[in-house]
Length: 315
Image (cartoon, rainbow, N blue to C red):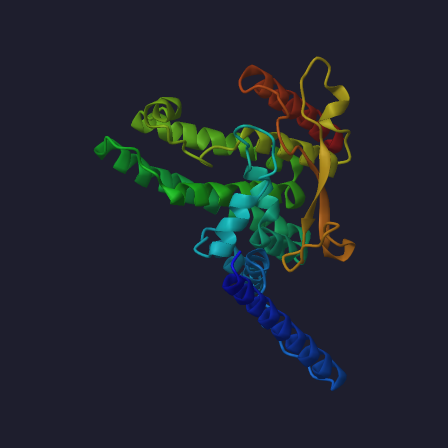
């Protein structure tokens, strides 16, 4: 290195040292004099979504307000929360319908509003919610099928997903506020209603997926959702888990999840006890159980256990 370059490098290093010294001295004096610089701390994107969703749920003052807002996810906070639900699942194609429902602060708000009602009023309101949401899904399907008939291209309809989520929420709430025989039949009623509508217009969802590679999401109750609902009804009525009689039936491991208050804040250790509405049994994923007969058998087994439980509860 030439003498000139060495002197230049030395000059740069000296300046950096002097600037660092000045900054340290300034900070030290400010601290001694009781002064500090305010730092503009913006919430993280995740916390901002939580705060926005809490604000939305807090605006739902009546059952009717909350029921109407359940069909609307124009807020990014709602969309991202529902899309993120259960994203840790190890399944190749995770079924997130149940996860999305228990993560939805609007559903938690409706639960609290129903809990404040007399039992009979809550039952009637919950029945009304299911009927209206299923009718809304059927009407949305009719719109989709009309477009489908006229277009050779795939049709992506976000409103179908929204309506299906609303029906799923109504089914979930039915497990708490409706008789078990009513709640237990809701998944079949949902499935049969949409299958009938598809048959009327000659639509085959499997062929549609094979042709366009675009799944029609949330139109039917997902199998994992149905399994979770049946297990929930069983435990709500004091019967043993569907695991207890599962001879030669493959079932995923059931754990427990917290259905939290609409205004709860996430914490590192999970939801705080005061923010819990109820703990629900939870099949998070299929855990390697293959699509097809094995999953269908698991759902059928759970349905039989639920039906036996309903009979016992009625005695």
